[in-house]
Image 1 (cartoon, helix red, strand yellow):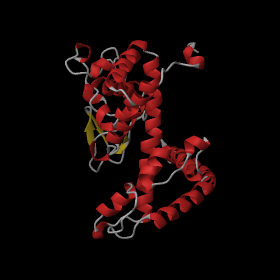
Image 2 (cartoon, helix red, strand yellow; image 1 turned 45 degrees about the vertical axis):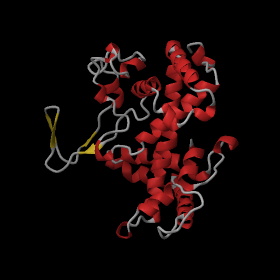
Image 3 (cartoon, rainbow, N blue to C red; image 1 turned 60 degrees about the vertical axis):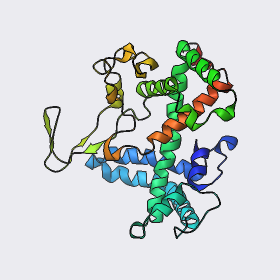
Image 4 (cartoon, rainbow, N blue to C red; image 1 turned 90 degrees about the vertical axis):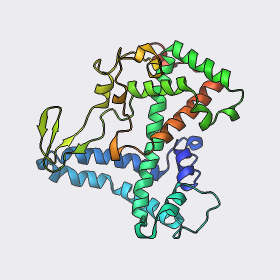
Length: 294
């Protein structure tokens, strides 16, 4: 997934899959997520902040160095004018060309946005694919139905495209059910209560309070879904009685509102294409401890 996103964003060939390793700046992205998690927690413990924050920043010294290297690389590769044409257009070139003179993105802003795009388009999609594959193979009837539909519809790999997979309701239904059973972001995205406070579920919450809804809890609640612990892709199909009482709008794996993920469509397209090709070309089976129930 990193190879795919790097090519789309920067027109770079990383060869992470062939080399079976990440580049330093890719490791930097993962490391920064861990550091951010620690920094987010210790701010609730002021007495510990004085001790722990310097240690975390010391841990981040190599991360910052690789960040600066990649930032300089982006600066060097980014066209300074919108009329500069690239042999192979990428996300960066489209962002640059779409930017007006009054709102030119700085290299720092480009780096921040592309970092989020890489994480969202690679790690989150890879997590989604892991859950998708697991639930398919632990539910043989679902896997058989999907394989039958995929192999009956396509006669070659070249026929399996983004547009073609978008027309397969059962493939999409299995993907939605996988997101419900195995959300890549189970905790939900936090928000801060604005000035004046807010009334949430009948309770007053003061301003500046960080709030979040647990995706996992919502998706596994019998108040929202019938048989919530059962993998049932058919609940997402139209005119199917098994999903008639489900509150389907509860499923918001990419968040909602202005802070919702703009990469939702890309994630669905990537996962659908990859799973469709895997199912078409290979007979998938569980292995190791998972296959024996361990």
